[in-house]
Image (cartoon, rainbow over all chains, first blue to last red; front, side, top):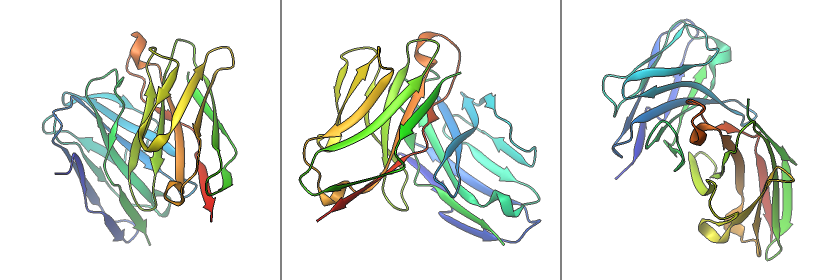
Length: 114
Length: 117
């Protein structure tokens, strides 16, 4: 019974295309996140939502647009994909905005732009 | 803003030897500190966390970490390495727990642990 599930696991697409990654958590958590992991394994926060409300929007190109239809879902839509968008994208959730119990991560979506 | 420095991008130990992965943090307020492990092609799994209770924290798989405020450190240790411990380890810090607003986890650059038979 997966706690944080992301789809798809792998995504290969051409430059200029638009793609979406979906994330769902069944933990009843209030807060969800998107992180980007680059080729050197560095993890960087992209967005954070708390109860469907955008809390954090780091310096991310506006080609990236998160959407949270309800607090259990946080999807990521990417327009006009570029080579530099190739990375592993992780969705995560925490019980509340304080995150004191830690985050639960999904297994990641490996995006390859060719 | 908070930050984390992990000393050593790659650590190699023999099976049965002590594992020591170093983490130093910077935070303007008392932090929450975490260690995560990432196995190849998988997500991150929480190993242990420090949230201002006991300074010596025990986690899963025999790992533990000690919070030392004077040294701003949170090093991860395991007395005896096992082959299955080979993975990428990330230290992370958050200031969220002390009412400073929603500051998400900030991760170090990771340390790859290799275990030699």
